[in-house]
Length: 218
Ligand code: NHR
Ligand code: GAR
Image 1: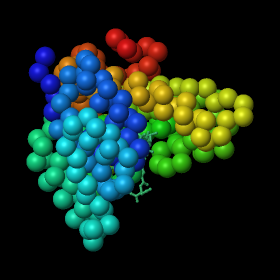
Image 2 (image 1 turned 45 degrees about the horizontal axis):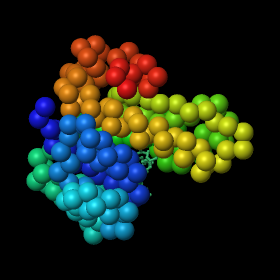
Image 3 (image 1 turned 180 degrees about the vertical axis):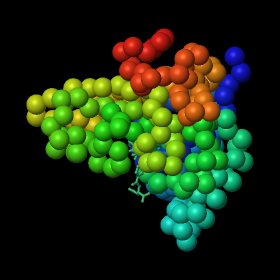
Image 4 (image 1 turned 120 degrees about the horizontal axis):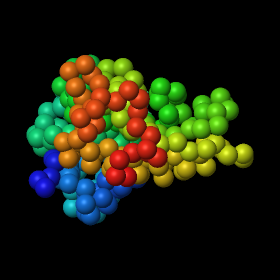
């Protein structure tokens, strides 16, 4: 099968990036054209270099406002002509013009069971709320922060004695499973956003996010 050209945006460690690199080296039909970071010291850049993937740094601090940063970021991304853009631990809120440009072709992975705990510090907030279940979600990116149509989720139990670190580690293991899986469906042409902004998988509009346990061909 022909490979889907993708660009991955990061800000940090890049373990989700690594999960996608590892699968792309096996059976995930994507060609990672570039990894772009808004932080020069993001360890994920080293992971990309190790894998022979082109990297670029675009520091938001170098720009006077969000609009000019996002315009430069859009031009940089489009120079690689990706069919799909992945936010993988990317920590900058994106402007409406930017997200409209990539409508239906940009995913984010968010460390909570959306719509719960949109925004930052999700693990801490889940512990504070004393939820029994926590997890991660893959969604299409829209103007609404962490509010775009949800594709796939995986949950983990919150265990006695958990702190934000132990809980984050449990969630991260699931993230590394669900991100490559959702990308695979998209690359296979099985997943898209329809004109009503509904997620369609295998010809059916989802009425609720897919849960990993019920996912096809996981
Ligand atoms: N942009 C839009 N328009 N929509 C989404 O759904 C987005 C987005 C940009 C990033 C990832 C998101 C997450 O998964 C994401 C989804 C950063 C912040 C944030 O508050 C919030 C959510 C997410 C990413 N960022 C601060 C800002 O001022 C900076 C924080 C920092 O630099 O540490 O941009 O959680
Ligand atoms: C992941 O848990 C991801 O879901 C989260 O940051 C971590 C990045 O880890 N994303 C956000 O919080 C976005 N605001 P990684 O760099 O090792 O993939």
